[in-house]
Length: 375
Image (tube, rainbow, N blue to C red):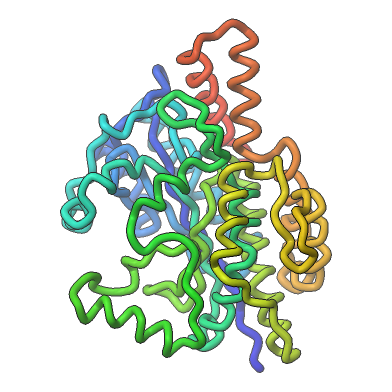
């Protein structure tokens, strides 16, 4: 079987904040125009006017992705600074209120508002998506069912949204609880093959419920626009290097599953009911508690799971030249996880005598600094 190229593409959504108050701010026309002048179609507005989205080019490897993502982040930050604004890459603003935000006046977003009503108004959340190039539809369908097992692991590592409207939610990823209110979200269903997937999607298209598969927002989906599998479960990362670590894990997982397939092996497909329990554990605890290993029949601490994952993907990381990024996943189960860092900043501010508002502003200040780390 011909080996796919396993190219990668990364999409990130950012929130814009005022540099004086650290409150959410709407993107002025001049900001979007300045970004588009340099980045062309690699930057776009998002559903809410306080959001901005970027997407890398198709990248052959993680080094190419790093250079493109540096350029994108640096340009957005520089253009925002001209308007006394800064981007942050966290999946929820620590003290922003969705009721005070306005959606972007474009036909696509107006249609979403009409179709989804009050549910979509609460979408004051940001995510990151990783595309891995697989130019065979049958392979995409086969790997999607197996890859679903690892989605909770990716969510746990990526969590960056513990706060909502000035309160600690007790969740590592509050974004997931907001996003799950939309239809056609969550874990992907189990399909036997590509034709089975197409038939199911076509039912909704024929009924006029959706115009195409881009309106399916599962945690993992075949991209409508590109020959890729698109992983969508992850919170966006404050730090660039953590984004690249998660992208590398995605890339290695896809190659590992392809490698098993070539050897007439496969990863066991578990019922979405069981995977959903791990998804909840990742949403609730992030990296501070373990996930269920269904083969062993026990809850395994995240550090142990990540060590097992590194060993499992060692061969693939070597071929894909992303060994260092894979090893960096150890940092995400320690102090490097974004949710843990934000809570540590809030705790330090509280111990210094800051009230709740001061604690949340300290967290946003930390997120502004983290965005520039490595640029």
